[in-house]
Image 1 (cartoon, rainbow, N blue to C red):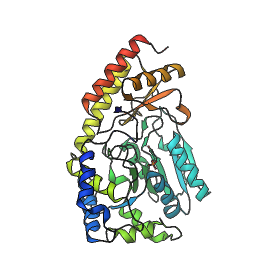
Image 2 (image 1 turned 45 degrees about the vertical axis):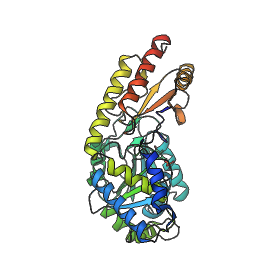
Image 3 (image 1 turned 90 degrees about the horizontal axis):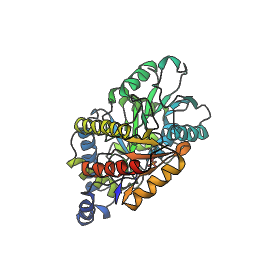
Length: 356
Ligand SMILES: *Cc1c(COP(=O)(O)O)cnc(C)c1O
């Protein structure tokens, strides 16, 4: 099977071997206060910083998922409220969960084909400005340039970025980001069950000043444990091990990013040339890692079925776009031959079933 679902997605093929090496190494049976775990944790964080070009002064935390990061940011970083700027289902969920925790959360919506205009943003003194860098539900992204502008626009706030389906696939401009998080089942090509959260020195300072300690996953506890390369609860050691091995093999992010962007550009050219209809019309707001193709409900249903019969798993639409789009992951673990295979299938399909 070829997996183009935008997470969980295709695993790096080497994961198969790393799984048995994890078993043989004994790391899965030692406790998370042991020197063996501490070494693994320290080495994984150092690899993450090296390969993703994360500044040394930033703090990396292990959490269970991106969803947990939404909760941590709401609880531990946003007592005076947060501003959520979004155009799709994940940004909206983040806002809605935050609202249950703190009713001071505010939202600002923009369109799929719209680059966020900072002149229109509310002048709101929020602790955190929450952006979904890559909106997996509709295949849009917020550029590094826009994040920089927003960051400059709110000098007293922390800029929190959901990069779940882009971190590890494209390069982020860390200088303008205070909190960023991802789950490993998207661009890291690993099985689900581990999240990473990256905090700037400014975020650490604010988090410690706020000093919220009412939850098992309060930032203060996570941070204190991480001073010893540990976690407060037993973490997903297997996934941390796999992340370590996969990162050791990975190219530095500027090279992965270049390849991801080239492949995305080829995808969009191919789809337009083949008369597929793209959900996002503005090429400046299209995602590099998740591509959304639009069509009549019947067309979408049929193409997904036919693909599956040929061993290709396309991503379903999500949220509002559930039955009128399919999505294609453009994650680094997917090989060029697999992309060629899918493009051949799509070209043959559209020749027989034009999308009216
Ligand atoms: C997948 C995804 C999430 C949720 O990830 P979990 O691992 O299920 O918590 C959150 N935000 C975005 C943008 C995503 O793509």
